[in-house]
Image (cartoon, rainbow, N blue to C red; front, side, top):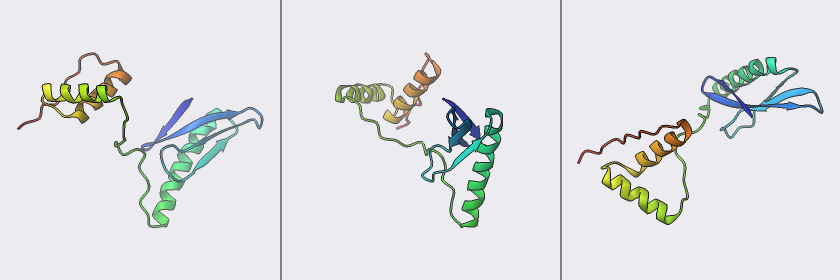
Length: 121
């Protein structure tokens, strides 16, 4: 799936061959905001218009717009992996959060040389 991006927001892009339209939804917010266009070329503009309308509506309603993903999430892993990561963090004088963050970055970006932030006592 192609992801549309604009002003810190992401949205889906789908083709509905049955109705011959392109459509999408703004991702990572609780409000359901959709957009559609008659061609893929116009879908990006409709997405941008939907984001702008969302921000304007929030301002009009005097409420804070939701920011997509706050950078916090729970991860469930095997106890032995949890222990190994915690031991590695202790050995590297860093935090478990730093180990997990750098590991995810390495997985997504193919980084082989991982450098951890050292905690100062």
